[in-house]
Each structure stands twice: as C-alpha cells, then as structure tokens.
Image (cartoon, rainbow, N blue to C red):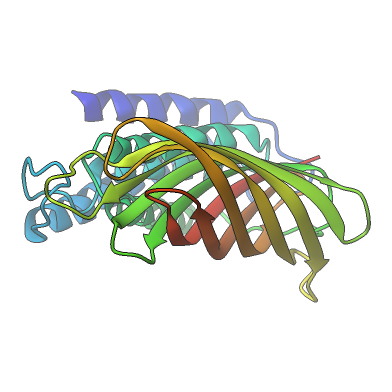
Amino acid sequence: MKLRRLFLTLAAATVLVATAAEPSDSTACRLSLWPAVTDAGISLALNAGITETFKHTVHEWRPDGSDDRSFPSRHASWAFAASSVLSREFYRTTPWVGMGAHVLASGLGTSRVWKGRHYGGDVAAGAAIGIISAQAGGMLSDLIFGRKCHPSGADAVFAPAIDVESTVLIPLDDNYKSGFATSVRGVLPFARHWGVSARAGILAMARNAATLKRPSRGGLLTMGFTGHWQLPARSLAFEAELQGGVAALTRYDADSKHWRAAGSVRATLAWQLTTAFAATASAGYTATTGTGSISAVAVTIGSRATF
C-alpha cells in the first residue's frame, strides 16, 4: 500500500512535468508526460530489485538488535530514488522541487539512524542505490523516447546560495559506528573568491556497544569562511571551507544532551547544471569536544540553489 501511494505521487508529479514551461537555458530536453512516467517507473523498479536483493542477502544486525536486515536502508533507497527522479525532471525549470525532495529524503535517512534502526553506512548505501537507480532509469527512458537530456552546464560563478546536504560520518575512534547528518547551508560572498557561510543541521551517530543501542544524536550550528575557485571547465568549481560553532548532542553513555564546541574543514567540487541549480560533492573532517566527543571523516552530497 505504501509503495502504491509513492508510485501514484510520482505519477502525479510527472503530470506537472508535462505542462511545465521549457526552461530558457535548455533546448536539448523536451519534457513530456510519457517519458517522465517511464523514467519514474524504470527507476523505482530498478531500485526495488537492487534494494531487496541486498536486503535479503546481506545479513547485518540492526543497531537495536531487532533483526539482521539493516543493510541497506530501504527507507533511504526509496526516498532518494524519488528525490532523484523529481530533481532530474524539474531542475531545468526550478531548483526548489529537487531541493525540497532532497531535504525530505535526507531527513528521513537521518531519522533511521536517530531511532537506532540503521547505521549511517546503511543509509548511505540506500541513498546511493536510490540515486543510481534514478539515473539509470532516466538514461533508459531517454534512450527509449530519443530524449536528449544531457546537462548543458552553466558558469560556476561565486554567488549567494543555499545548499541541502546529506553527510555520512565515518568515525575515527572506537566509541561510535557510522552516522548520518542532514543540514542546510547558506553562503554569502564578500570578495571574488571568499565568502562567509553558515550551516544548521541534525545528526545521529550509532554507538559501538551492544548495550548502548540508542545513538548519540542532536543538532549543530556552525559558521565560518568559504573559498571558491572556478576550474578550467566552466561549469566546475573547487571550494574550501572552515567552520566552527556549537552542537547539542547526547553523550555516548547517557541520554541527556550537552552543549559542546564543534568544527569542520572540507573540500568541495561543485557542478553548475543550470544558472540556478548545482550539485556538490564534499570530503572533510568534523569533530566535537567534550565527553563522548565525535571525530569523523565526513563525505557529503548536496543540492544547491544559486541566486
């Protein structure tokens, strides 16, 4: 029943695609109803097949010990598949459909770690399956209907932007297993290559102990500086960021939240798909202080609306 409702929702969304105006920065992709419906159908079918195959062949116990079907996260795979289909169909017209779908999918993924049902790696694997399924479905749909939807790209200029980010956290100590985070980031340039940035989000880290089934979880708020350099390929840019701030997280040995200092450093590759929408991928390091401190490698994918 849930899958039926999800499919009907996506089908309704594709009806909107069919009536959407052709964007000014793309003439190579003519959006229409049946290619979009086929895109969604193939993507969801591929996602179901891949997810269920792994679900029934990889026997990883959940953090709460309820069963051995933790890998991958089914919720994350379906959510990111749906998000990717919507983003693929709408990003030429508006960035906000994809951005909204991304924040919902990422928030759902984080909630699975928050509730102790998955490790961050399970959610990341589910997200990867969903995104790959959606891209493969779109390519097959384009091939069937002869639709040319390859991104034309735009100049990756340094401009005010809002990002939605999904991050898998790979711990560097023995207190935790992998975690997942969802955040919203804003950036405001003040020079050609430099700007200020701020990030607000939620995160959850699975604990590395059978008797500590509840994850360390909470929110964080950081701000700092961002550098931006356009690469020779005009639609690509390299960014570096350093931020510091605060986090309110539960300790690994207790359920009460405690305030602590937080900071991160990372490098980002941004791909400007249209003048208003970009995709990003980042790698870096994040840490918090205090009892039950977190020290982790952070790998992030993001959706960006530029202004």
